[in-house]
Image 1 (cartoon, one colour):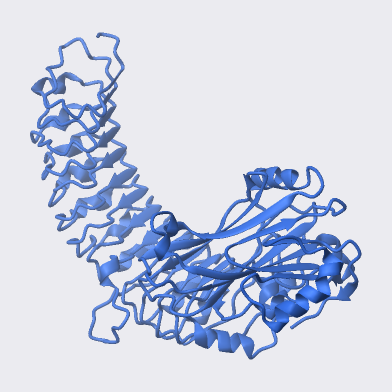
Image 2: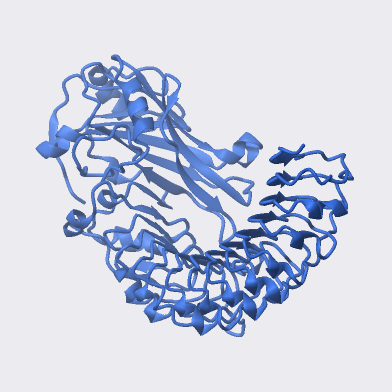
Length: 574
């Protein structure tokens, strides 16, 4: 045992006692006792003076002697996550000056020893879900090397040390699920901070609350956080967003969901790197200013009073970066839809996925080279042998309605398949936290079939093609174009209906439109529509069948084919 360096006893759930360690284990550097049922450590563990990694994760019965850990002077990593009976740490913990990672998540500790300020090498401190933690010692502000501080779920923690801004190296500060309402002004000094979250627990959100008497989070100036990339202020009962939020020049993701402000400062929309803006459930918000050309996702689900100050117009399109698309989620935004329908705009030209109220397939899908419509959640399209696939793009419009039983959370998923090879799925999330889907809605999406050789945008529902998952899409595209007359299957499903089919959102109808890159370059599209409506014998369906049966060789149920000699038609704008 003299040369033993690593000892793993993970998962020995029936082991309640570890034998004594002899004096010949001085070379042991890693000891892992994850999920072991021990109640205490042998006293001889103090002989392991060369130990660098000590893992006691989920030792739920462990109650350590006060000075157990302080003999490990070479220790770099100490993991006590899930030791739910551990309610104190040794006061001289600070003697472990080489400690770099300390995980105390899920323990029963009430406070940290003041000597923690001597852990000058500590870079990662996780105190997640320590529900009995009442305060942090001021000495924590001496941790100059600390980069990650996670206090998620410390529901009794009401204050941060006033000098938290002295932790100059801090890059991630997780305060979600705490009771903190006043943030020290010194936070502005955290110049290297990249991620800051204050999200409150789900139960704290009251969608019907309009009382100004409720105490929300008070934000100080954040102007010095120029490296901040992600800011989460979800469900913090904020009534006003500070104007200097526009100083966060590196901000990429901003989540303001579930708050009570009725307007946003214009400075938000001058942030040069803002890619994701989440405003879900902000029911008092009246107006959304201009959407920046560089923003890729906007979520205003259940913002029932919102309208747009100005919708994107044709002149906005050239400013959008290559392969940058916009996802716009507008569930239950009926006022916003009235706003959109009342203006001439190019909304489909600026989004690659959009969910919104609606009871019929959008007219934006009327001018495509090929369109096919079917009831139900699946469409099969027989692809022709002559068509060039490398510039082919697809637009999908899904009409769906509410379910009789609506679970708390679900995802509606669109998936393309060819010979068992699938595309990357497109998902839209649903969550009843801020409101249920109670009426018909429409989902527009433009999955990527191929990576085009040049940047391009289409004229209707297809915009800038995203440039990601390249190898996966090339494999999918290769299978699609491998030989002629391949069948492309498009399926829209609800992830929750795997466990309970009765809780599925009902997909009523799908329309699929195909457009080729060459048509975009030429400024022309070829219009050809194919309809399959096995459950409806209405006049429109009959007209479509009469007009297309001979031309397009309409196939069996749920299938469509290209016409070999379509007639060109100029692209039309809304």
